[in-house]
Image (cartoon, rainbow, N blue to C red; front, side, top):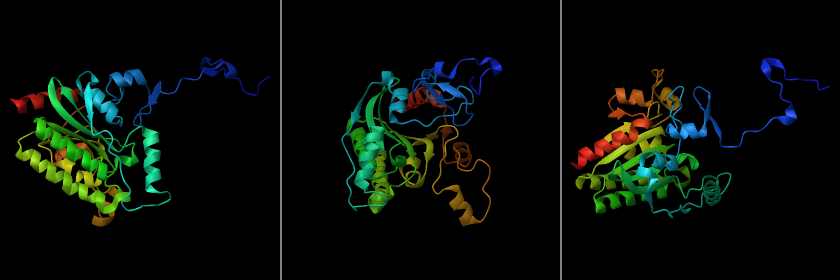
Length: 281
């Protein structure tokens, strides 16, 4: 006789007879911890059914949510990072890049595509946090710059979806230069009178917040997103004061005038489509 029998609460299945759920069928909300069926989660735009928490997703999911019928042409797909500093921490930077590419299936921390949203042409550049924390390296800056050039050439509005831990330390000054580079390109986009929409998602921090993420003609965010420059601990140690409740959430940033509005992901496509249509007319 087994030393343990599962008879409480009607559970009488023998251990050897239990069936494992296939990988990828279920997910768990990081906020309320309730189980989420992957198909239902996808239909709900990767937002928890129970607490409306917006799960972190990548460019694949955002393109799926925003582009009509998920139909788009990827731009500048084959750009990859070099190793200008021959950087090596506990492993060479080139090895870290190859590992991230194999793990995520991405070339770098950003993808760009052109397609239609609510029937309106739109160029989208979207960051991926899964690739080295969505860090901003030379490829991220170059893809944004080329996407802006594409928008100017074809007179198509540009949407930037930011999700980043900040500048990529392995590229040092080359990474920081992307802040000025992308800001200058956005100035050209403004001169051409082409709309630029900045969507800030969880998290948007560091040099990304200090440059292109906050330079939109409209700046919008998802509910509950972490948005800031330095981390709360650094700020608290610097100013020697306790931080207010909800500090660096999108709601706090909206209240203090740095955002235009917050949009639920499930309503994002309709809201963006209406704004682009208004600007085109």
